[in-house]
Length: 235
Length: 181
Image (cartoon, rainbow over all chains, first blue to last red; front, side, top):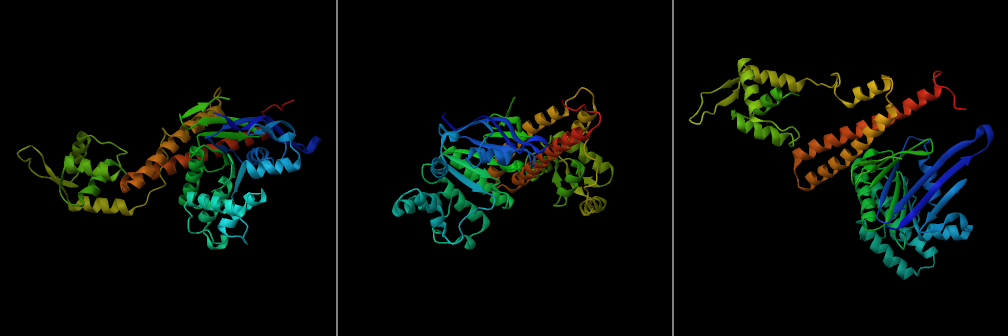
C-alpha cells in the first residue's frame, strides 16, 4: 500500500509565551491509498488543524506533511496551490459550492483552473456526477438542490481529476441522519475504489464508516481503532 | 418490557400454542433475544396462575392452547398505555462500570473509557451494516431492532466522549492534582 498522506511528528503552535496555544502536539498519521480514516475528538482537540495541515492550508511549526510523496514545506505558494487543486479534494460542512455556477460547472471549475479543456472537464464532471447519482441534474444551480444533493456535488468535485486524497471536515454536519449516511457511504465507496480519505466528524455513526478511527485530545492522538478488525491500536 | 408482557401482547391476536408464541416473539423482536420454548411455557403457566391467560386441555400431542382472559387484556392495555423511561438504569451496564472506574483507586478511568469506546465503535459498525442489510431486504422487525442497537451504541459513544471531556476538565481544575512543572 502506498501512503497518499504521511504526517510525521507534526506540531503546530499559535502565539508565543503566556498566550501560546499548542494545537497539534506531535501527531503522526499515515493514510494509504484505499484507506478511510475518521478523526474524532472534543472541540479544540486539533481535528481541524490536522485537516488544514494535511491540505496545506496551514503549515506545521515542526514536523513533515507529505502528500503523494511531496513534502508540502518544500513548495512555493504556487506549487502548493497546484497540489491542492490536483491532488486533494476538499469537502466542507457547508458544501462551499459557487452559487452562480451549475452543478456541472462547479465540478468543472478546479479542472479548468488547472488547464483542462472545457470538453474534457465537462466529460469528467458528468462522470463524477453520475457516480454520485446526480446524472441528469448537471444544469441545476446549488439553490435548486437539496442539502444532500449539494454535498454530493461537492464530493463529485473533490473526486474528479487525478486526485487521490479527500479531506472532509464534518461533511454530514448539516444533513439529517439518512442523508448523512448516504454521503458517508459515497465517501467510503471512493476509498474502496482506491482513494484515500481523512474525515473529521463528531458523529460516531459517521465515523463507523471508516476503516480506522483516530481520537485526538489536546493535540495528541490518544486512541486508534482499526474498525476492519475491531482491534484497538495501542499508541 | 418483560417476556411476560410480550406474550400477553402477542396473545391479543388470538389463542396461541407456546411454540407459536415463541416464533412470533422472535420475529417481532428481530431475533435480538432468542427465547427457548421452556421459558415460554414457564411464563404462560405463571400467567395462567395469575388469571391473565386461560390454558385449554392438552391436545393429542400434549400441546395446550392459551388465550387472553379479560384481566389479561386489561393488564396489557394498561401496560401499553403507561409510558416508561424513568426506570433506574441497569446496574450491569456501561454507566456503572465507568462511574466505579472513576471512583476506584488504581483504575485509570480514561483507559477504561478508551477500551470501551473502541469495542463499541466496532459494534456500531457491525450493527449499522446489519441494519442497512435488513433495510435492503425489506425486513422491518430486524431493521428496527438493529436501528435501536445502533442508536444505543451511538449514545453510549457520545456519553463516553463526554465523560472523557469532563474527567479531563476536572483534572485540570482539581487542587489535588500536582501542577506539571
